[in-house]
Image 1: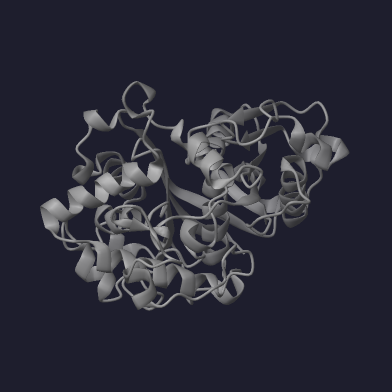
Image 2 (image 1 turned 60 degrees about the vertical axis):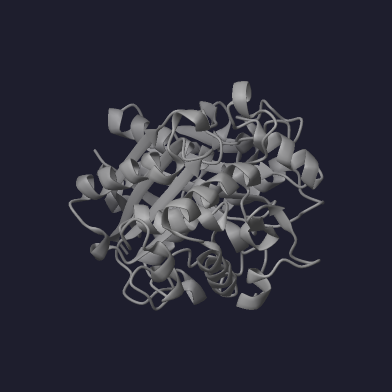
Length: 387
């Protein structure tokens, strides 16, 4: 048995004062069930990806999905959490259950309500994903600033490439009706610190940081034994999960070893190289993270990612179009929903259902979802199976 995606749902990402976590979950779940053409009674089990860490008071929320459809009542449901890779953790939990033969129909939903707190409160909540014995006083912009400094020390200043990444992702988001920030940025604005684009953690400016977002995304994943029951399906050519050490002090930041290993293992499982990919949705929590993903994916050798990005290798027309959705940078980063959102975007692309975002001829989509500072990495390769 192999898992296949047969339906999906995705709320807009943004600030939604009138919607609580439960409403976001219900919106994505209802759309996913409708997309798959099933009802709640047809689902065997539910996985909810939700980071929280004090963002809201709802810490016991695994059953919130059940209210979206009466048929979901009494279905087993579990909450998954793995920092910013929480959504992918939920997906892989469902995959494991299908592969075991224990279930045939899984509902996966990732959701986060982040805007209930101010920026300082969100930063404090996200900071709990670090290693508290050594990093309790660090924000995540400060942590990823260390990656930028390490890159600069080994290979040269990444600032220009980081600005190009921000410009590209904002341009891509203009095609995504679900994106939080549909506003084009010019290169000069992203390059120069200013009153509207201040430095957050040198060299990271506001334009180098992902957004604080509310939102949800959902998938219906079934055993391929049921393929004939559904009009469309997307398969997992590969699915790999790697966890590295939690403390920054235990890792060499320039090696980016966890993501590199997860990506290499996914290529091995799929029997492909980077040249076979049509597109990638990668974890650009900060623009330096996307730059390092460019090299981890093999688009450019170590230290050569700057030139590749500046020359357009990851643009819509480039060697490997990256973050056609706008990425975390402009689509938004609703933590628990992010990994599920990446898979929704990839699935839509390989079936030719991505609307204005569609890349003509897309056939293989890579998703790379990362939790913490290169601690938990999930790398999936999606391919069309039916439809």
